Length: 503
Image (tube, rainbow, N blue to C red; front, side, top):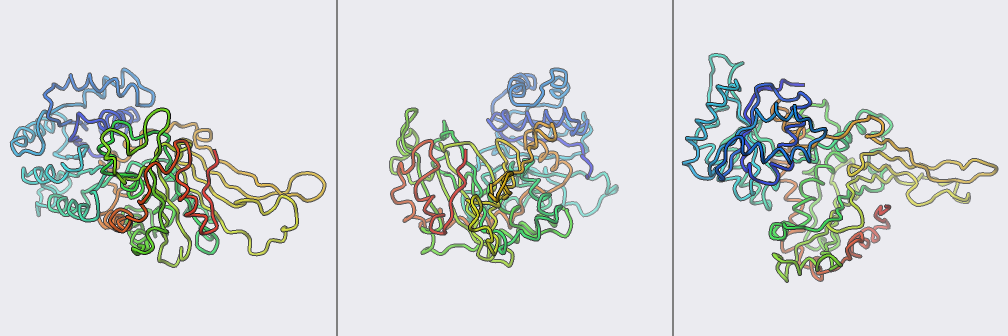
């Protein structure tokens, strides 16, 4: 593991929900685990005027609530790392004072000029802030051709939170803006799903076990399902969500990352460059549906009214004519040797029957069913691997066995590994290890520019005018507490398959 350098973590959007609910608790957990360099500091930047101590007082209740194993003594230590700067980061006049404050902290803490910027702001502010960082001369790495002591030169990196663009055009524009200020090796496009233990374990499951990799292809796998189901509504985020929807919010970002880990080729070595190269290749091999195919490759929906609130299109902040999907199920194929003809079904939605994030790998039945006349054999999905990512962290492998007793009778059984039970470890907030990776300069679990743009290109047919027919009749087309619209079941039924909807 590479060295964890000292740095100043500069969080733009210090007053935002993400910072208080996720980022600061995650950094506290990393501090408590000894994962932060002793000299590392945190500087929050936001427009509201307040002192360091005022911001620390605001953050403490969030850390108590969100962080694992809160320790008042550890908090006191951690709070000394936390500082605040009041300024509008999109305006040039913010930066002389900000640069001076960064210089003071660097001298006090001994961070050697290393800066890690985190964009915890609205997507529309990404490009203006990056342009101001560049104009202020805060980024010097890659712009100095020599150094008296190369080992002591500083680095400047940036973490960009999703959504990374709103569509293919805006994502490409953001990449160009970032590229003018930072080298690609200094840009960390974060997706906190890649910080989840079971997502990272996918690569180990596949490539460290010879029993899986030989059958991980079209010859033996019938199809793959990837689900991210939520029981909650859109809450107070109606205006934001109506501009986003399930495809942009979950599928293009989080679930594509999961799909890439399931489908990618084995890298020659577990290094950031090799892993990212294989993810780029698998995303690039997605067969993009034509305009005539779109309606047959997706199922879109909006939740209906229930006792708690009205239908989605009736909510305040949502246009009554809105066709933004609160549920989406999409079918993808890869145009490559490994997965030729094997469909990947991805779904995500609000107000569904259960909270669940999982991968289902459904294997094909044996070529010859010699037990076809024996009771109990040949039931539904006899060979299936289920990787439960949340809320439980488990692997489940289903296979058929003989029932004990006289005669021959078959039954499905599950072999299960429960991470919490087996390893006796509580998962930490996913942002923490990822931010520490950025401090180390490890891009393994971050997205490359080409990968991001390829993912947008793959979903655009389901978002632009080509999806108009699929969005017809979208209003209130699934009941709250169900598994989505009937069209989602039909999407798989047309292929002779069915969703895993077990409780």
